[in-house]
Length: 312
Length: 219
Image 1: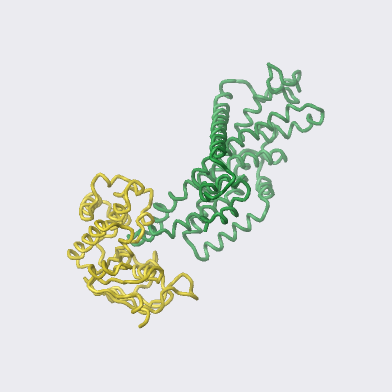
Image 2: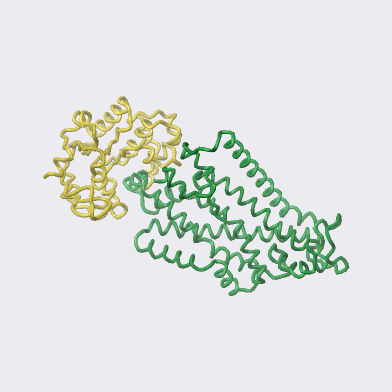
């Protein structure tokens, strides 16, 4: 079905640079252009990798090395524009913004990674359970997934956060509980397709129990997809953390996270001070795009046909 | 005796592939089932091996009717069948080495202790060199992989062998080697065989009797 160029076109309408593999008849794209797009892609992967490495090193190394109190208030230095002493300037109570951004990135990254991992574990478990149980269990579970997906997940996330005191863990729980749905769908579809392979028939005939088939043959088969879903979810989770904090529902305002930084900079932006908004904003956008770029490259390796589908 | 009694099976209840088919295999007997591609003989083979639930009809194994299919079949009934499929690439989990592949039924039934000896013995029976045993499916040829699949089917010493187009993808010498391995096993164990295929010459030389799909559905 998906081997037909027409069907591929439906799956990948926008950027069809990928379909040359499955549809060699595609005209208008010379070997040179293909080569060029390949080298752009390589450049994208390497720059993404460089940014992600830099970010990880920064959040791991800077806080212990700098040994500065990112929360220390220096009212005399408030709202200084970027300078050599304060490369990103200072905020409305004189805290160094570079330091605040790095600390904020650390918190956001932690929230993003933990939430993505938890969501993936939940999604994989639910998807695998639904697919391997089949029948009414599958139908009920997947309809529940549909019900949850029909509610905007930021709304659902706000609802969950509102049940707890502000802090890191409620945000993690909120993001994780609203983001496992797509993973559950992907894993279920993958398990269903793996389950119909003759090697599963052979395993059943060889006396394997349901559990053994799942653990030995099905789960290892979906791990690459689930891992990819997890990585793709990290930037998404970071954005959600920022959104929740920006709305004042996520982390407490004194704790630097990218969302709280942007939020507390709102008032100074109206006064014409651009740096407290710009730099945290860049810190949200650049690392998340870099992670997404790496995840995209990984997805291309697993499933070249889906290249155009941006799952953010 | 393996009896298939008026089986109707398929993937859509309104349009079954197999309609009211009966066939029986005596212990130690080898039956070749001939039929054109797409006629439903593979589906029948899967039903016979308890891997596909029929819409109607019964499978009776040594006088005992099968009540469940796939995981719902009791393990003893499932493992009474050794099954070899047409496409070795699809019948082998790409993540397992050939040793793991062949030994999988032993491990699944809690007999891991026998793995080393049995795998070595079966590798010799089906003609896989020791050096290939550590490789994964993508590192060996179709023929070698099919040998491993046959070894996997034999490792629990089944009373019935179901070979569904086992040699359709293979060259003549590998075909001969696999058929010889099956026949040696049957001579040794007295197992019955249901060989499904479209190669009339091969099945007539291999099996005690052959039935054509048309004869089954007409009756």
